[in-house]
Length: 207
Length: 207
Image (cartoon, rainbow over all chains, first blue to last red; front, side, top):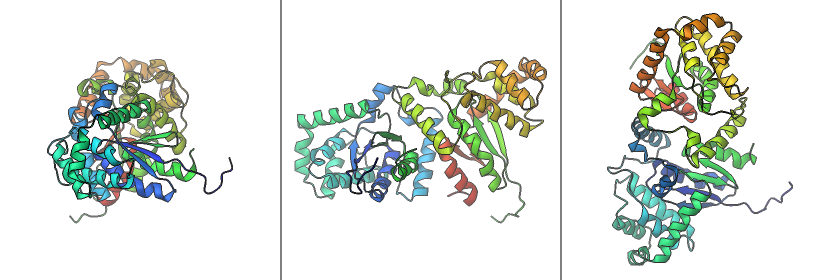
């Protein structure tokens, strides 16, 4: 199909959970990959806990043998990628407040929302802060220049509760079962170790 | 640590299930990777069904959303790697006969056992034969030059039953929870998408 060089390219949808280490690794890489192919990235934090109710899966630490391996794999991968990382004292944790805060301003300022998201990942995986605490969410918001008071008000708004619920339902409807989960046009890629195939897909248009 | 260039290098342990597509992909690649670093590979077929009883995991097709994604991912990866592949009509299947046949001669002739293993993978993933049938195991044995009668007798030997049970128990004791699962010295790598890290580990001695 002939297309002009400035044809509109769909953004990459990037679903993740703030307490997912592989989501953190993908977050650290996806913008640079997308930019090489003229794509933008649509960040979509979701709640794996809600998704696991649909799929019947368990958080990794709860799975015998696989839990121990994954802990080792995450640390090894972080060293390889050069990403600051400590295994959090409490893992996994809920991230409802972080997600609601994200959606409070992500439509208006998606780039600011991405900086906030990286701040949340850093608070959890580099600084070992318990991001399930709304206080930590407010601290990270303040760090990127968003008023604590504004976010605190937003966290209790019914519209934001509904928004997060809709985002999670939409993710499930699109097949999201883990973090990170990325969709390029209609092509899904699960896991930070599929970013190489994702990049090849962007470069070649698929195979 | 200073070592002479001809220091003894431990073989890579390669655990897999004959009905694991990612095990098949790893089988197609691991010997070439190992050879580049002067390593041999110790192939160890196991029964994921027995392992899943310990970990509480489910076969992929039984997991909502993840099952559908994995089917897609396996076909896409096979096209990318250039490995002959059709989704088997029946998946997954038990591979007790295939494993027992493998261990009937793998100590005596490991290279022949590897050819037999690749034949089993091909029968299942390229030719869509039901490898849970002992007949298919005998056919594949015959294809690589092993007498059907010898294997048929072996399949019912208590010593081989015990051997397979021991292999599965040993795999679990070493942390194996999925297929493929590879161990380089004491370093574990799970999944065909960790072969890149495994190769880097061989090249660098770790990080």
